[in-house]
Image (tube, rainbow, N blue to C red):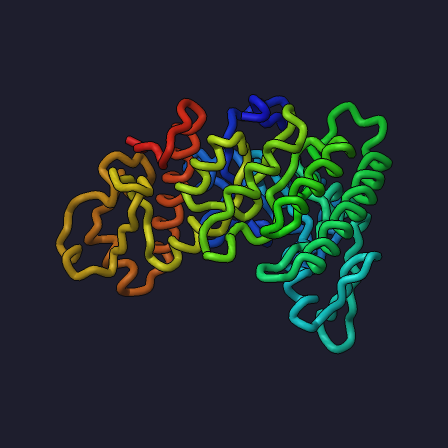
Length: 357
């Protein structure tokens, strides 16, 4: 690992860590106590959505997003850049050297700059902040990718200047992570990594689309970032959450991951179960007819609320009648699966998802 622990408040968390997405200050279908019970130590919130939906007044009133949602664990805030870029590059906004502008509706226009992103993230009072970056879209040519790298580096510099100005004099400061862009072009990934490393960030994120032109995971870019950033810093797999991919990145020294996958899969009736295959896991889907009278637990080795108390037959029934309890139990199970994978990785990084028994 590049670092030995993640520190927040007076606690030290062993690495690696997975942070489920609580985009709008909620992990869908579960509350903070449910998340705590899955032994998930931290969550990620989205700067853009909270900036638009919540605003500064509420954050000032409650003293930060953690107090607002009654979450005592670690907190990461992303920059909101991915969502903004998606809007802008679909034609409803514009990316310039100043920042990203987009229209919420016909009347309201919003400009998100590196400085504004940092300012709002500090008001969220999260433990780790991610700077605004210019996402390198998949399939773009070299020159277009180079433009995104130059803008990403410029925005990173402005972000760090704003961050340093605002946290000056603080005894305890949050972590600040720069984002490496450059797409599938190795020299651009290396250049971005080296120039960000010169700025002295606490961590470096694997940004952009993590797949190569053949649709395979781009481990080459991940390794370039690991090889060309500061060795005592975090390595962050932004938006990366397939268990086998996290295991492979952890072997390279990646410490932090976040993704919507475990909660999204739960809402679609896909529950993670360990097995001995190449990936190290398989999906259990409760809609199968053969589970109609199945009295077994989804995973006999899991200690989550679902597996300790309810049968496969009961879960199938809940999904069939479309009761909200089904998604809650499935989400709890998937989050516990991910935290069990991280617990194993903290002890032993192997070539595939470790058996979480």
